[in-house]
Amino acid sequence: MPRTLIAGGAGFIGLHVARALVSRGHEIDLLDSFSRGVKDSDLKEFLEVPGVRLLQLDLATEPLEHLDTGYDYIIHLAALLGVRNVRQRPFEVLALNHTMTERAVALACRQKHLARFLFSSTSEVYAGTLRYFGMPIPTPESTPLTVDDPAEPRTSYMLSKIHGEALCRYSGLPYSIFRVHNAYGPRMGLSHVIPELLRKAHELASGGGLEVYSPTHRRTFCYVADIAEFIVRILEIPACTGETLNIGTESPDISMAELGALVLRIAGRDAPVIALPPSPGSPEKRAPDMSRTTRLTGYRASTDLATGVRLTYEWYSRNVFAGAGVSAV
Ligand SMILES: NC(=O)c1ccc[n+]([C@@H]2O[C@H](COP(=O)([O-])OP(=O)(O)OC[C@H]3O[C@@H](n4cnc5c(N)ncnc54)[C@H](O)[C@@H]3O)[C@@H](O)[C@H]2O)c1
Picture 1 (cartoon, rainbow, N blue to C red):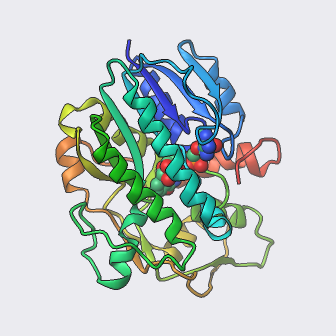
Picture 2: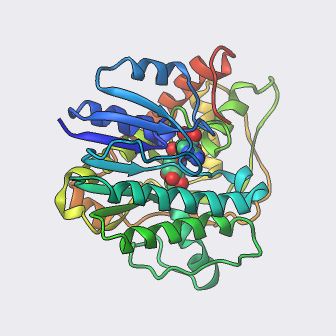
């Protein structure tokens, strides 16, 4: 039975990946400090599954020497992220993300028979190239990366991920890097566009409208079960070793105004979308070129946007909007 450690495993993507791996027969250790992850009912239920353990510790600061050296796979998802952290704590975003990746790599290097180390990077690594030089959209992984202006706090996150990608490459480990593009779904907190619009639509007073920032900006959103399936396939398929791959979906590409209308429909609200100005620093368009990932993994995202948004709304209504559950911000 393969043994897998997921650093950041109590978070949004982590728990979905863990569930997918358990269904494929893995034993799972979830390592998390709960700096953002929360002990909600989904996590508690998952911890009841035989072969699943929680290691509550801080990857950036606490000793790791006592951890097992018999893992087959390590998936490193732990990171400080999100607009608020990036704007208010850029030093910690850069320094802690660097330290966590360095320590996760060192832990991986101590393993006796590690088959793969997986590192989660981000579509943000393309932000500098998009801003200064323009680039193809959908964007292939071969696009040269440009470091954005360090005077902007937002650069801290992309720098930490470009640096993390380089650490993986130079580590001598059998690694795979995946660049996540616009994941959404249950348990992602509230500070992302889809849960935020769902909350506003859910709470809309009669006669009101749904306020949508950057209404003309376009994105391709990928449901978290598909993100998890990509990660599991990257882990399982030997040809993905040494690869850097986009994960997400190339289509449909939808404007924020269209997304607002879809959210209103799913929340059952007959109300207009009210267009607000673009958010600062938000690119007009972003989409991954998925041809390389599809060729290597044999997979394309299969959850259509309306279904994914409905599943997300149902989960948030039940667990968060009703006021009964806990949710990370
Ligand atoms: N969600 C997205 O759309 C998206 C997009 C691009 C990249 N990513 C990347 O995917 C990964 C997972 O993202 P997510 O959306 O699941 O985020 P998340 O915040 O839900 O998960 C990250 C987890 O890491 C944990 N963590 C943070 N600091 C830690 C520490 N010092 N020690 C141990 N655990 C710690 C948090 O408690 C959290 O549970 C991250 O590396 C992120 O940069 C996500």
